[in-house]
Every structure is written in structure tokens, then in C-alpha cells.
Length: 67
Image (cartoon, rainbow, N blue to C red; front, side, top):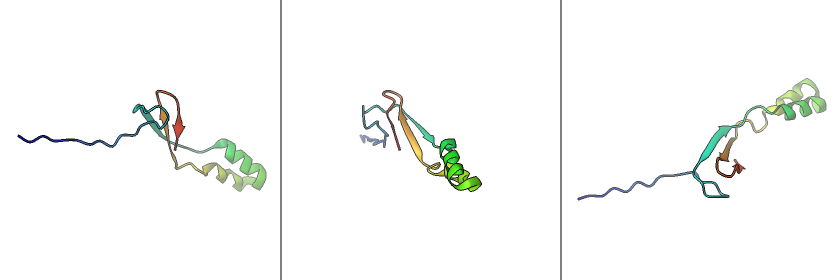
């Protein structure tokens, strides 16, 4: 008889250890875009894309957020 063992890679909250995690991709930041516009004119709106491709994880148990 052969037994199989599955090792699963799970994302856990670093604060509480919960495995109930919501993963979302950050989008355009209007606040960064507006500040960029004030500082650099119309091209400053591109500053809102800074950090837009980062993945943000949120624990559904304790609301801890991390990237």
C-alpha cells in the first residue's frame, strides 16, 4: 500500500496566521496623478501609474494588508 502526501503552498497572514486571504492588483492612483499634475503639468498624471502593478494581499480575518 502506498500513501501519498500533498504539500500545499499556502499564503498565510503574517499577523494572525489565517489562510483566508484576498489577493488584488493595485490600480491607478488618482492622488499620485493629481500631485504629479501640480508638480509637473499634464505629464504628471503618469505618476499615478507608480506602483500600479503590485499585488496587494488582504487578510479577511484581521484586515492586515501587505504586498
